[in-house]
Image (cartoon, rainbow, N blue to C red; front, side, top):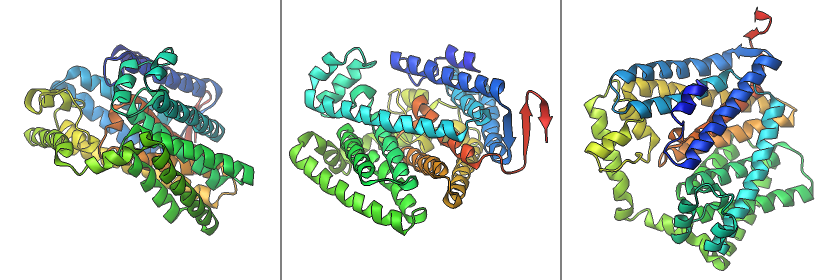
Length: 414
């Protein structure tokens, strides 16, 4: 599987950054898989099975699409993403590893936020000073020209997701762990940096990606004490954001683009993409025309551009048809169910580690689902991998308390 993924590059385009990041993600997965085989048993419990079955079925359906897909190469490329998903469901990721990885995300996101803020201050000088670290200098220069910033991330969409993910890690920490005054101030300071950096990316959907998961967590999973703390922090953040927009003009880009979102000329381009997706769907509504084939269809019979639909759900529909879409819904429901069960387990558990992991996984998953309304996270390896990890984290919280079958070096145990 990994060899096949590397052969077809695994990225979403032919840029250097896509190729290298694809190699990195597949190497990490291979390492985790090998470690699971060598150092511990592979645990197949009911939660894993419920997640694995629809993913496996979706892969089988897409393998059959080789006979009629509009783009054999793209279909193979995106099937490897789902093979990666299936492999990650088998891999045993324990709670300690999950906790440490989320902690790394928490602090790496702060470093990336600082780089985004620096790029807004230094402008073109940022590219010359940090050229060694930038894998996509042309894209960063173009973003800076339009007053939108991605820093060392090199891509505005992923920069916005990285900022939201970092915020979720800090919020989960505040929610799960006891904090003294100094720790709370540090968390708030880091969150303010992340919010300013998110605004500088200019991604309009980022605001919904941040607020919607927070609202759901606030409504259903926070007790009275946590709600009071959340309200206080929200007021502080709101005041800081207002002051930032007054004294840091670059941070207004998100608000300005939100105002443009109601303009017809801004929406019209996406309406054309969505119309092309619907036309493609009606040509073969049952089975679709192959995973990843929308780009080719849109180029030949749509807008004349090799472009994603900017709505992954509308893009999935014509590519995998009604049958594949039903299976995808089953995958989404199964993964969300696993995460909700992890939250329920964490809510009654005295272990703060469980709460930290479960709250982070829930908010990140909801955020990625939300981004799918205007973006295509499941067609981007970095973003899809983050989604896969959240499910693995949730399974780690649930542990092996339910009935399970263990497949390991000693054979099959029941």
